[in-house]
Image (cartoon, rainbow, N blue to C red; front, top):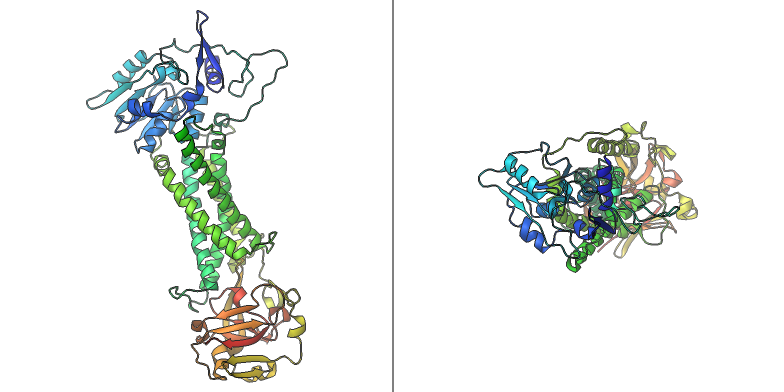
Length: 565
């Protein structure tokens, strides 16, 4: 960049810049107006008359391009100022850094060309710019709109300037992150600005593409999560039953896998839009209110998404550094997150559409600065690697490579354990030689010792056990069909059963077994696992095992089976 370019950028990143002409006359440059959103006058002069593809020459920070995109009009801004284009990209405008007198993309297809604000960004001469534009881009039905607004406080001066002026800056204010000319030892410190972030890859095109992948992963995670929540209190309309036996195993494994995949994608998306955090709010009250509402909705979206991913990961490792109940909180915030995503997509849809439009400038990597495609590929690669390194707890054939999986599939009798008998406070009752299972139906009941249970007709089935944390494992279970136990007290097989455990600590000491599961002959009161009596931590003396049920509802250390009326 030449000295002129550096000086030019410095002026338009300063809070207080003044132009000094050759006669020594000083004029204030109202940068805040230059960088603000398009106002009513801009819409009347430039935006509303444009009905087709529009080229904004000397676009500056892209307020007109942004306004056109929001109206659904294809628009491209061209300027030479890095600072201006940094502001334009941060607000979602599609812009190109190039001299407007060079060859431009799409020549011959632009229906309108704009030259506004005295064309300071292209050398300050709208007459020359107009002639060039007209010569290269005019044809029947096409327009060149030249605008020069009156200079008043809060606007840029409108009269033409000599090409590439050398403004002097008064007052010792910072210019583009640099210290303005001032006395020795003076150091200026200011908050970052959007244009201070120069990463080539940042911008709407990267954000839209990462956001699409993130939306797909988050959507799958949401749907499988809602399916998991329905298991705990299934409504009558939900098709929840024992078939297929491994359905919950795969849906919950997919839920955890997509949640983990979301983490790198969310981090890259936040990186791509991070400079927007430092965008200065508009001065107009109405636009300021809309700006505040948009920022507020984004804050809700980011907060809810982070809560879901962080709390979900902590649940996978079974660490709960909070006092609220995880399941209802996770479900409630999931709805907030999805609602925020839908609102965000609706608001940003014009920008997203433009971001997926054909490119007007090749994505070329600079030395030390990766391009958009490289960042996108890295994000997707990191997401895939994170998934593969953890999904082995759900996918058996990946267990050897899933070195970060929380569960490796091992445990007593070859099955992992979430809660031990000691942690559940069930050791004393479960090991009592006087143990008796009680089966109750109205005023009828029967009590059975473990030996008497073992003397009843036994069934053996290979069934998966899958936990909400995402791990799962298939095993061979032997025991008495629950429907056979109900027959002992005259209860119909199509009965809902309340199961009560001997545990004294922790959640899910009681569970409800719906009739559709009780009817299935594979729903067992299990006594053996892999041909051996149940280990104490696996629910000795007896436990429930049913196809297609969450692990927390496969009640261990069962004391009572009560038929619901």
